[in-house]
Structures are given as C-alpha cells and as structure tokens.
Amino acid sequence: MDMMIRRSFAALAATMVLCVAPAGAQVSNDTVKIGLLEDFSGIYADDAGQGAAEGVKLAIEEFGGKVNGKTIEFVQADHQNKADIGIQIAKKWYTSENVDVIIGLTNSTVALAVQEVAREAQRLVMFSGAGAAVLTEKACSPYGLQWTYSTYAYTKGISQLLPQLGKSYFFITADYAFGHALESEMTALIKQGGGRVLGASRHPLRATDFSSFILQARASGADVVVLASAGNDLNNALKQLKEFGVTGKAKILPLIMDLRVIDAVGKDVAGGAIYIAPWYTELNPATQKLSADLGARMKRTPGPLQAGAYSAARTYLQAVQKAGTDAPLAVAKAIREGGPVNDGFATNGVLRADGSFVHDMYLLQVKSAAESRGPADRVKLVGVVKGADAFRPAGEGGCTLR
Image 1 (tube, rainbow, N blue to C red):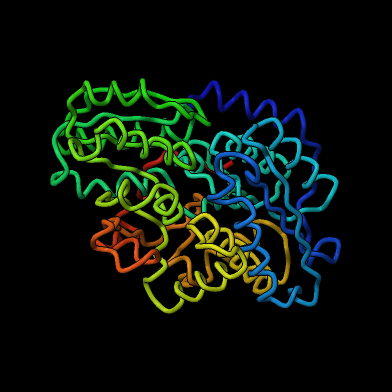
Image 2 (cartoon, helix red, strand yellow):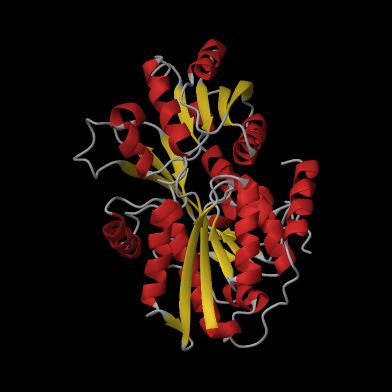
C-alpha cells in the first residue's frame, strides 16, 4: 500500500476516533473484553469467520472464563471486507464498549485501517488474519501485533524452493494490499535468485471467472504460475487452471494455502502443489490436540487463521494474568518477555518490538489421490523454516514506532 493510501486511512480513522485514555493499573472496568473483527460472510469466512470465533472461545474456556478473578467477555462482528465498516466497529468497541483488544482482521486493507484506529485509541490489536508485512514495517504501531503470518514470511520461506521450480514466473494476483505485497516480495526474491517474471494479471476480490487471467498466464509460457491470492478466489483459480490445461504443463505455486483449500478443490486439482504454512497440524502432540479440539467445535478441519486466533487470545490472556493489568503496553511487554510461545499453534514464537510474532513455518506438499491413504491424508512435510530465516530481520522493514 503506498503512502498516500495509508495517509488517507490514517486521516479517516483519526476523524472517527474519540480520545481514549490508556488503561490504568489493574483491570479496567473489572472486565477483560476481547473483540473478534472478522470476515463472517465473504470470501474469507471459511478461512477465519466462525472458526476463528471458536478459537477465541476455546482460549477463554481454558481460562475458565476469568483472568485474575475478572470476567472475560467476548464480542464478534463482521467487517464485510470494507475498511469503513471496520473503522466504525473498531471505534465503537474501543471508545464505547470497553473492548481491550481486537483480534482477527483477515483482509489487509481493513487491517491497515483498524491499525490507525488502535493507534489513536491506544488499545491493542492482534492481527490473526491479516498478512501484509507493512503492518509491522512502515505502518507499524506499538499497539499492533501481527500474529499468524506475514506476506514476507510466506515468500521468503518458499523462496528456497525456487531453483527447483523453474526460471520463469507469471503471477495471478488479488488486486488489493495483500496480493500486491505477496507479488512484490516474491518478485524481488525471484530476481535475486536469477529468475525472470514474465508478467502478472490482477483479479478483483470475489472473482468467479479467471479465464482472461489464466489465458495470459498460459500465453506467457512461464515455467511457474504463482497464485498471490487466498480464500475462494484461490479455489476458483486452482480449479480453472486445471480446466484450462495449465496444471501439468506449468508448475502451480500457491503462496497462501491450507487444508481447507485442498478439501474444497480436491487432490486431483491440488495434488503436487508445494506451499508454506504457519501451522502444520501433524507436527507434534500439541498441534494435533489443538486441531482435534478446535475441529470438534467447528465440525471440520481448522485452518491456520483459526488456530492463530486461538493462540492470539490465549497469549493475550496469559499476558494479562502475568502483568496483573490489561493496560495495553504492559500486556505487550509481558508477551515479549514471556519466553517462547509453544501453544499448539506457534512453535518457538517470540514477539518483537515492531509487533512481528516470529515463529517457525512449514513447507508442505499436497499428496496426489494415488499417494493419499484417505480423505484426511492430504499433505506431507517437506521442510521446516525457522522463524529467524522466514521473517524479515528487525530493523530492515522501515518500522518507526509512534
């Protein structure tokens, strides 16, 4: 997102936010209140949505509904993938409804807008769904924590596989901040490794017909078609790449993918695809337990954004307990100083001063229908990318905290 757009969001947020005094010592209003602001009805509803709500509720229930003797309250709302709606809800929650922390915000454009609301209100926001790396780089805030992943971590982590994928690349990109960030960061890594980007086509959100974008990709003759997209847009792109005969002729590299996508499109479409993820359900007993517990509530396999919402809420409550207060900067400090987070979602998670939650990432390959032993046998672990190798080093992203 360029500076002009960011300033427009900041100005819009500033006009809609009333001054809110920072929370004092102890727990404000004798209640710890968590708000989940998510996409509950749009293209990311399956990735986050009610599953993310179940993740937050699970974390609250593990605390018995109280922290330091104070009741934990939970509210949720749909931002509808619209920045103005996200701003209105965040402003109301922070200023009128005493929400201490907002979690979620799948859709980076909405997240960037709410980041400015949180900055003005001096309240915490934990991005369990938004990935644009600018959130903890040029747009960073002492009140904003990027929890589940960043676009940089996805592209940097997968870049080690580029030499074996091919020399030429074509992008099919979601036309907003998230997709632009993925394309920009991946392009830099491709060129750094000696590869060539032959072109890119950009599709709107909620696209159903990808034919023109796919025809451009096919005509380019690229070795690899890179999908800088997510949600149902990614599902539609994968299916139509198969229908147009591109799959099999070129390698398909989805930069954002999870088990839900594989289930939606089938192994005959996704089989063989390599991707990176912030969460691998079969990694260890803790990840298996979280997947089972959250999956039982959702009645289906949870994804990383839903597990990330659980982790953000759980870590927030642990920090309130440790700090003895819900004062936002004291809570953030308690998270940073609390040691590595290993909670069934994150492995070796550490929060930096710029708001980046750095943790290990996982390289996965989708099994073909012939390789799979059944519906639940979808992927195999190809490699582990340590957090320090995946996330941009501190100080290199242009973060100036204010």
